[in-house]
Amino acid sequence: MSAAAEATGAEVVDLAVTPLRELNQRLHNVTRDGGPAHWRIVNPNGAHAVAAGLDAEIEVEVDGHVGYYCAGMNKLATVRVHGNASTGLAENIMSGTVVVHGNASQSAAATGRGGLVVVYGDASARCGISMKGVDIVVRGSVGHLSAFMAQSGRLVVCGDAGDALGDSIYEARLYVRGEVGSLGADCIQKELRDEHVDEVRALLESAGIDDVNPEDFRRYGSARKLYNFSIDNASAY
Amino acid sequence: MCVIVGLFAKSTEIEESLGRHLGTMLEQMSDRGPDSAGVAVYRDPAPSGSSKLTLFSADPLQDWEALGGELGQAFGGSPEPEVRSSHAVFVVEAEADDAEAWVRQMHPELRVMSAGQTIEIYKETGRPEEFVRRFALEDFHGTHALGHTRMATESRVTTEGSHPFSTGLDLCLVHNGSLSNHNRLREKLRREGIDFQTENDTEVAAGYLAWRLREGASLEQALEGCLDDLDGFYTFLVGTIDGFAVLRDPIACKPAVLAETDDWVAMGSEWRAISVLPGASEARAWEPAPGTVYAWERQKV
Image (cartoon, chains in turn purple, brown):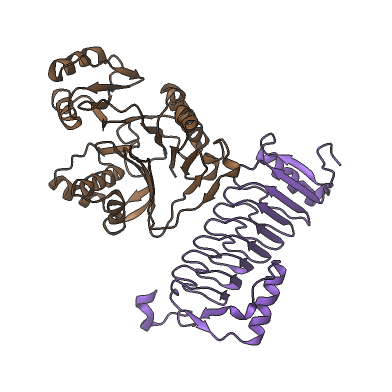
């Protein structure tokens, strides 16, 4: 354990002192060489690509606001941001967990293939755009064009969703508790059956949210009308 | 990419150090806009009946003292130039419109960067950190200021094509994005008597705002008109004599962060720009919603 280790055993890296590339290289080295299981990053001050490309079962806590692409391409690791996250949080996440205790800017969890992304504040536009298997739980609201072209995975929104939710959606399942500004092309409301309530309950539980009733959600998904080319839909393509 | 920053002082400490803070914000954002940089600073109102001009000369040997003499002969008094690199500020004993018209007629080789009671605009090509040093931003106090670093997309990298753009008294605009209907709109606004100095898209947006305000719209109404009349993508920061306002297009492609403390309101394209301000880590920070006007104004005395 290094001299920088805290009493709690976490390896502390101060981004006011340590260059970002050095931090990310050290985090990447854990995959090959092993290393501290707990990390604490301080003074991120909006830096881009903090803890991007992790591939090890480590826990990384970030104290402060992060910039673009935090925890991008995450595998196995758990990354917690105690602040806000800018554009492209956990972009293309493969597995593991990414938690933001503040708000997330646009395109959170974009193209995510697996794992869990939790935002305790609001996520803005294009949350879960082109999601391909990731689970997303937002305690607040999401902005317009969320789950655009979503292919698979689940998006749970405890607040409201902006305009054009689920535009051109494939097989992702969307759950919204509050108002939906409007539904995008080929996205429709569907019946909330018992298995869906169970699904929402499990996702809320994994996100550590226990004050929201899973029966209060509405389910949205694909009408499957735009899947294949149909001349009758030409105007919608 | 481009970057917008803005700082609105709510305390005298921030007013006194406004330029230093703005310079630090610009330097933070250098990598997003390395082509050119510019600022608009609102400070030291010209006395009643007088007005303030910021002029730019491409000639490094420009004789600003002589120009001051000519301005004195034309309008009275003896205006002294406050020279900063390629720019000079004059307080002229005339209405801003008249003083500006005189310069354009008598000295077409000069550019009027801004005209009004309190506004001063400085802009140049080159790296933002170089700009901050060259124009000694740390000297500036003021009530509010806007800044821009540019990565050019729509028109050439020139001093004139740098931001902020001003096409109205004490009015300026900085822009991140690009507009697609600016050519046709420029022609329409020219017919309305709005004057343009470049082929730049942002200048058209500034001209549009000047036209709407001239026709009696409030700043908020003029900005809401952008949502209908401008085609393209944009995050705008607009400076007026009293404050500034932020607007993002309805799709919100271009980034924006707002933050507020008891001492300041700040706008930046990224949190990195705001993080350098005193008390930033405790500031209330949020992302402005698309198609929504956010405005701050000083209390009118």
